[in-house]
Length: 461
Image (cartoon, rainbow, N blue to C red; front, side, top):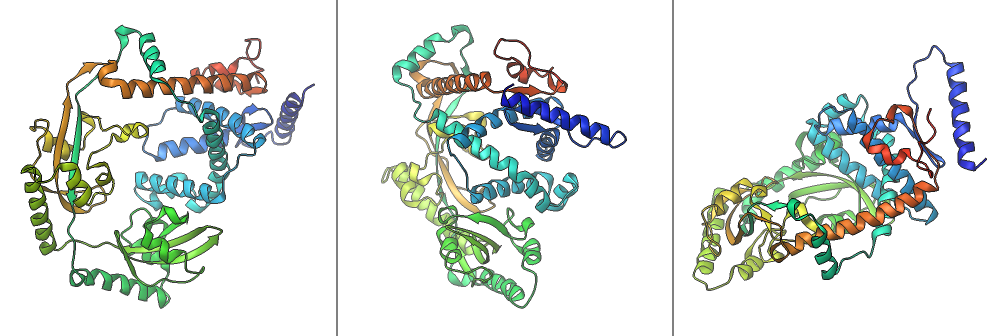
């Protein structure tokens, strides 16, 4: 009898003993599936389903099938990662969990509402998540190893396109290439002083004994960390702006920093823990709001740049690189990238995916034209001025190699990656004992997992 079946029978015996000893007790957990020497508990699926609901999604029991399918995949990858000595650091786990919880809190409307929804504290939930997140990150690294180095040649792209059913080729709506030049108001030292004074006052309260976390929740203007008492979790030197890193990495745990300025405003921080090249900090932020005078100066500045570009005294790409305050676009000559297709770094963006204000600005432009400078507010709440540039507008069309090579190349690459992963999973599935609880046998997502080496159904409970 092989080792995996011994483990499976052992788990069944545990279940029989449990039922015999607790006939009148309420069952609070059960085995949803077995993968090799690992089990997937129903509680793991329920926890991920709770995350799914906390993110604002509608109740859908079929999603539990998808979760189990992902868990099966994850277990196989994680088992191989252990064999290949692939691991992840505690810092990576902390950062991932903190990022998830911040997103969930925002979706739920704050930390307290999320804790009520989860019926537990975030600290408790964080510890419950840790084993699953650790395994997931390890599985992700294993998957990256499997597909690393895969690429497609132009000939492979052409062959892939020719293999597609011509009657079902995708139809692309209008696409545009758009650039922007942004100018944010720059305040004088005197104009900034009131915000520094506010930060200094909050620091004084903490230094005199006020609870840091309470002050952060009440007054910090960093919406991502304030609900967590300002806690930013563990981070490395390259994860924060340079001003923050310079302060955080020269302090000892328990020390309170002076007030300092970064592009986000005035901060002060406390180091909570040091771990090698990682540091865990919490901070309080006071954002800098523009004055009327600074807005006027910004408007005058961008009007001047705009006129020089329109008069062709300087080209748009050079002007954006030299003068734009948007760091996400200035080093790309001001051109926006398609954020739904970040790997290809394409500047072609479906018109219906543009920010509404940018779409309005370019709607009446012809390729090569510029919109006039106008006031706007970015996604972080900063107010400034910008003008936009319409480089090209591609009319709706059916996919073809001439216009859509980059998209077709991406699809061909993804197809090649999927085939590689399918081959790997099929090979592992054939040599790994897999048992899925009868409750999930009607799930379409799990049909491939319900076949053994001979094509017959796996053992059912």
